[in-house]
Amino acid sequence: MLSRAVTPHLVKTYGNRWFMVTAETMDGQAAEQAMAEALLAEGGEVVGSVRTPFGTTDFTTALAQAKTAKPSAVILNLYGWDLVHALKAYTAAGLVKEQIGVGGMIGGEQIGRPLGYANNAGIWGLIWDPKINSESSRRFIQGVIEKYHHTPTSRCYHGYAAMTQILEAIQRAGTTDTQALIRALEGHEFDGLKEGRSYFRAQDHQHVQDVLVGKAYGKELGLGHYQLLATVFGDPVASTQTQNACAL
Image 1 (cartoon, rainbow, N blue to C red):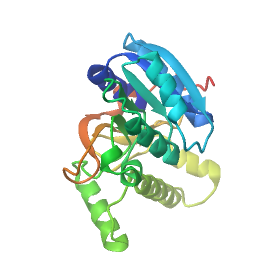
Image 2: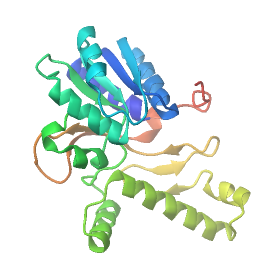
Image 3: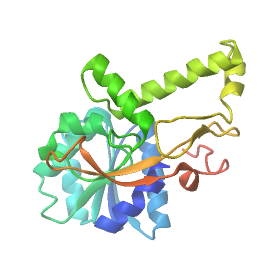
Image 4: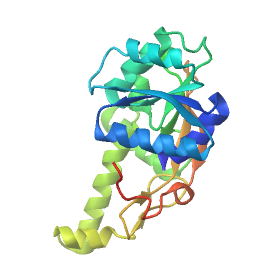
C-alpha cells in the first residue's frame, strides 16, 4: 500500500530511473520488492542497487555507487537509524546538485526529528502525521501532549492503534483466547484516526487504511517535518489476497 501510494509522486517529481539502497533484512528486501514492482507499473527501471548490513552508519560508498549510475532518484529501503545516517550522507554527497532525488516507502516524524531540518529531504510514504485532518487524530495528539509533553510520532500512533484494537477485541470476545480474538478482529472497522475508513480485511487480516505521501521540509514551516502531498485511501492501493502471498 505504501509503495503504490508513494511511487507515482516520486516518478512525477524525480523521474523513473532509480537506484536502490536496501538493508540486508527481510523488511528491507520486502520494501525493495514492493518499490520495484510499483516502479515497473509506472514504466520505470531500476538502474542499480546495493545492499547494506543492518546498523550501517557510513553510506558514503553506497551513495558513490548510486551517483555513478546516474539515476533520477535514490530509493532508500531503510528505516530507523540506518535511514537517518543514509539521509545525512545523501546531503553530504551533494546529490541534490547532481539533480538526483531521494525518497522511499516509509519515513515519518521519528526519522525527521533526529535527522534535523538541514538533512531532511525527499518524498516518502507516511503511516501517520500530526497534520491529519480528523477530530480523533487531534484528540490523540492532545492526549499525548498532556501526558508526555511532546507531539506524537507515527510510532506512537502504531502503539496506540494496536493496543486500542486488541483491548476492544478482548471486550467484544469476552476472552483473551487467540482464535476468539482473531474472529473478533476479522472484518472489524474502526476509527483509525484518519480521514478514510480503517478495517481489518477478513480473508487475510490486511489492515486497510489511508496512506499518506509527504515531502520532507528543509526548514521549519509548521507542525511536523513533512508537507502532506496526498492522502491515498487504502482500498485502491491494497493488494488482492493472491498478491499478498509472500514471495520472498
